[in-house]
Amino acid sequence: MNSSERLNEILSIISDSAAPISGSALARRLGVSRQIIVKDIAALKEQGADIISTTKGYIIHHAPKPERVFKVVHKDDEIRTELEAIISSGGTVKDVFVWHKIYGRLSAELNIRTMQDINEYIDSLKNGRSSPLKNVTSEYHYHTVSAESEAALDSIGSALESVGFLVKDED
Image (cartoon, rainbow, N blue to C red; front, side):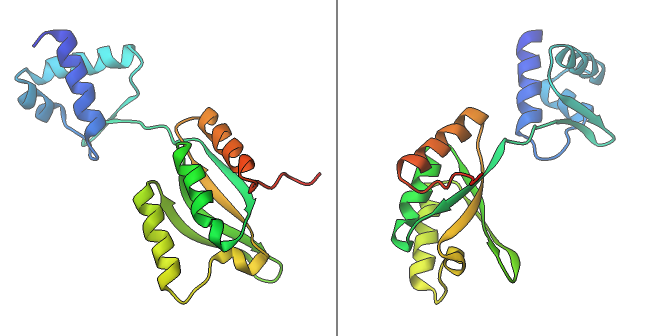
């Protein structure tokens, strides 16, 4: 394995790990000395990799994904259409919340990322005794949505607008 391949492998190992990886563990895994790993980490940092050195090893700093809150309104039978518009445009529906005049902000975590998540959510609404949170505020509600980029969030807004669910701010 040449130096360039080793740098790529180090970056891959650290990126894929949920926990810090020590220099010694990287050295054993790649068959080089810990000193080589230290030099490689320095080279990766010079190339712009956002590697953080901790007392337990190396980690990659992952920037948080962009988020946006969308105000929407629709009927119960349009929930699937709303969620599919968001998911198919590259979004994750983190939560749903409403602003109630008496109780203030009421929210629920959703974390809907996939079509399977949508199906499970719709099934739970059909099989449960509860109604969607939006029903306490005349169907107006908000979703915090995350995506890979601001452009994806713009696309999600356009998708919600095209199906008639997006509520524009009243100025």
